[in-house]
Image (cartoon, rainbow, N blue to C red; front, top):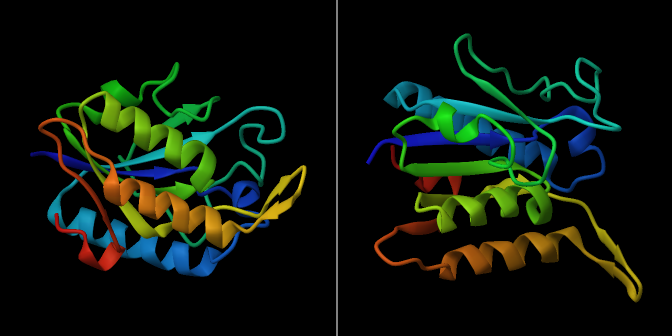
Length: 174
């Protein structure tokens, strides 16, 4: 089962206001080191659009992370990294995606759900995604609660004949 590590929207302005950023960056560095050592492809996904204009400081990948030469960067304009992008073609024969990134409840979840629905095996990395508090009409949903709910959801996600796991970065096997 060929795998790929997909790093979603770990960009300067996307991370602004998110919780546990340093821990997520550290877990992502662990994933990057493991994937690269095992020869597993790393694919970077980078949101662009109003407020995240290409080539601005806010659009850039966080400086604690650094795509290696030859690692593809897929530009996206929607929450779903498969929607109107080159992601599927970039993944090639990978059939197992290990996902990490920013905006747990938006781009990471949407991409993970789409990947699973489209037949990819999936590893949701519980300590390698982040978001911010979500304002609601009744107050605020704490980011930590959003993260915990998504970890719980992906621990229980099932599709026929597929493997879906929710583990920490240190538990990912390449």
